[in-house]
Image: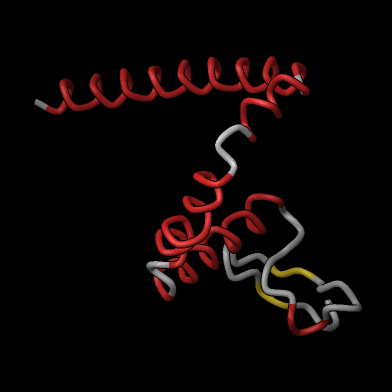
Length: 111
């Protein structure tokens, strides 16, 4: 393979996209791309630890105080969003409950 590179995640050889050349770090496999993105996000968060906290406290919280009725009005005007969000929250709670049960079983089986 001429111009092949090694994927930094799965260590498989791949031919990079012509427009990316040496800048491409992973193969085209989705798990590899997601893992590289996860690593990059983790590194960014480590380098910017207070970004989200400070941003919320100084900007978003103040905005929400000044626009207290915004969420209520938005939900009234967008009932499809309310329904979609409700279904998402229910599914999330089920997944979280299952995950907690699995963790509890794993902890008990280690004893």
